[in-house]
Length: 165
Length: 117
Image 1 (cartoon, helix red, strand yellow):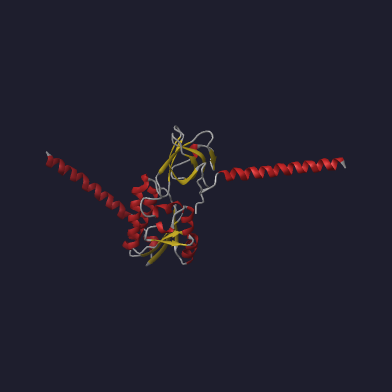
Image 2: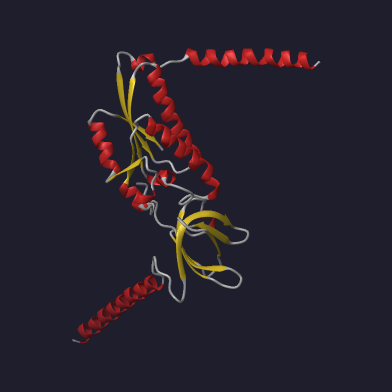
């Protein structure tokens, strides 16, 4: 009886999985990426709701990987400002206890982005407004004097601007 | 001549009222200094952890310290908002309070303008 149930469950699982795979293969960004060998993007991350912030960062990582798969070299910069800033600090300070799980996951993604050589820039002005001590940021995060200057500068260098609010 | 004198008196009176108003405003503002704890009150700032309308309490998380809860009453001064229902989790606030046997009593709660930078 157990064997029959196991076989039935397997039979149900495989078609569902195949369906999901075929759906993801159906869609692409070929038109947008046509002729490109490299793309440059500046992600302006400001969102302060931790679950949404985590999803945004995961999407940045996913976007990077999809570009690599499409054989287009991604050149990314992630800019942090506003209420997002507190989630890029070390340890358990600055955030609520209920937000600590997301903060830990965000720190893990920061490590991954750092390993991919994606700079993460924290606006020093925003840090001041959020009352964050400069020394309390994650080691992978680089403080810049003014996030707006970075925004302007990178766009002037041809980076696409991707708001993440 | 009499009319001129009367007009001058009125001007002086209004000038006096304006000075009094400015002085009183300054005094009131000086009553609660930011970043300073005194014999009369303690000061703390942080983000809102929870708000209980039923219990009329606000709990704050300090940036590097433990949570602190305060009771709110009719004498608590609200600045930057009008009702407790306007306060939401994760908003920044500053609180001047008096510790007591039955807990901390908020004297003033200030919700700063969100700068969005």
